[in-house]
Image (cartoon, rainbow, N blue to C red):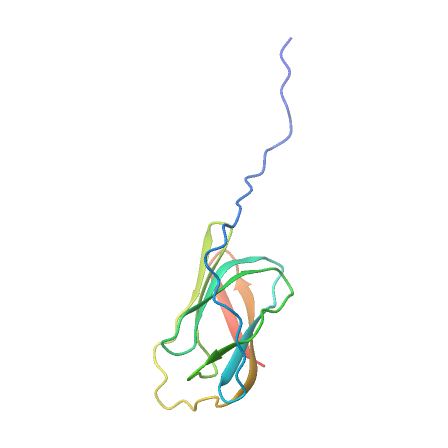
Length: 125
């Protein structure tokens, strides 16, 4: 007699956290944090609001990162992260005509709008 299992094994992909950029907050600079506004955990989110890349590490669903200070930032930024093996990227073309955010605390809320197509939205709060 041969027995077969009807259970399917799910592939679980772990997220090995890369070196995370230290938290920093400076009232004289633009301070930005990330809000994961999705139902997925983000792996090794890289944020670059204007030629100053930082790694925010693992951001679990519906949570915030700490603030990180930047010399210059705009209402949108380069964002790249993974959910499992799926890569998500938000790539600005340029900042021509945009106004700098200036000093203060800001949040980029990131949502996944289409998982299969790898599309995300970024909203400044």
